[in-house]
Image (tube, rainbow, N blue to C red):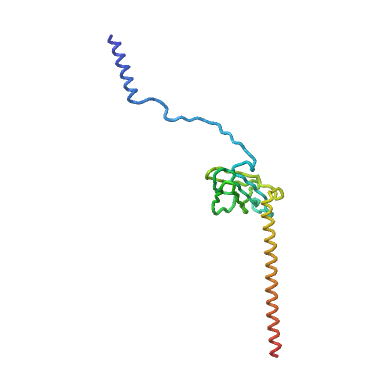
Amino acid sequence: MNTHRAVSVLLAAVAATMLVTGSFGFTSVSADRGVAVNVVESEEAYVGVVACEKSNGGDNGTEPARVMVTNQFSEEFTIEDVSWDDLKDERTLQPGDSTTFNNAFADTSDGTVAIEVSGGLDATVTAQVKEKSDCPEKLQKNDRKRDKQKKQDEKDDKEKKQDEKDDKEKKQDEKNDEKKDED
């Protein structure tokens, strides 16, 4: 009975020790999960991006591009960066809103621009730069409007120079007339 009693005391001591130290259970669990990413066309994406060539070419290994970003997500998001654009202020877009960046540059190695957004949606979106002729009408209108404004500015400058020249000639004629009157 002595051995029986010794085993019982030993088991009781082990049980008491286990109760005092707690369980040897897990405090955290980690598991690998698969992620599926679906790539959709820009018309269906949360961040709609259209990038088009501009008329003038770049000479520093980049191509100038005009980039239009549209919020097609259900919440607002903020545009934090556009490829090599001199983005001074972040732009926040409400659902359905669009904005255009006129000074973005595409990497000529793959002809893409990258846009980073955060807020209701955190993502980096890359878009292929399209040829100017393949751009949506909205972006082409901007080019036509800018070209028309440039032509008007050139015409105004030419008229201003002509007016200045006419004024100078008129003053010269007046001086000549005054000289004749004095003689």
